[in-house]
Image (cartoon, rainbow over all chains, first blue to last red; front, top):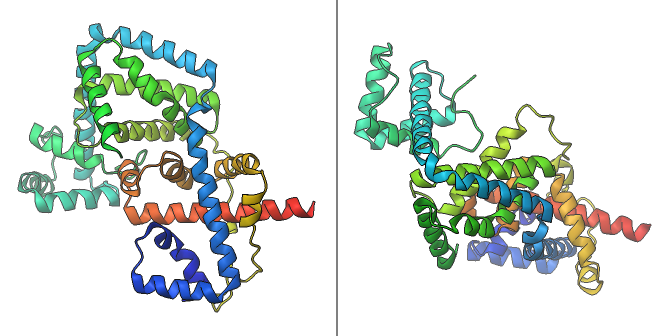
Length: 171
Length: 201
């Protein structure tokens, strides 16, 4: 093991996931290498000091922001009972739209590579969805982008595995 | 995450669904600090973070009813927060961030440390500059690009496991681990330079 390897293995070393034989090699290197000893010690101190920040971080919200936020959320929540049906409908509309967009992008061959592999992965385990997507690609003509609920719910779960903020289609 | 937190979340979700009085207060009590901080660390601007936090809580209240429960409640909420913030960042001029590459350790072709290593660990323990160090850690973390910053905040500040962070961000555990390690290597280097310059000055 050289110094470079050691530096990049420190994560495994400190979280305990390191293979015992490698750990022995690392310890051996440390006992003979002054720069690595300094590097490792300062790395450890950095991690420790960072963890300390956790203790007071919760209070970092400014009082006036806290008050405004509380007022806003409480007021909005008061309207919740009269709006609950509207919210439900909206959530349902969002779901439908999301699934329909995915189906449209799939038909147009415009899924991003991450989404394609998610869909492929899922279809290899789910005959229902595989059949649906096979039919889509065969006909190549879109009768309806609105998949049945069973498939829709699978697609929604599938899209949740994408990194936040990432488009599932190619521009 | 602890069982206790999980139970607390379950109860909270249930009372949000039922519209129990006090549910929203409980939601705010448990999460407004965390959500605001997460938003702050991504957006780096107080008024943007405040608006994002409002959006997050509205989304949570609206969707609590239809939340599927296939992930933990808090991780669902963090995900909504990350999503909301990233959407806000789109089209905006990004904050200046440093290139993490410039702060990775440098090695010779043989894989040995290319520059002398200063051991300042004892100094930190001895001197009462911990508060100062905390301030510097925050400053340096803030200068990371959001790719690293979000991972760093969820793992090291929020104390989530790599598995939880991976789920929230839709990344693999090895990817999280590698980003986190690079963020820590970066911080170590920044602190080294800071302490060295402090001594020189």
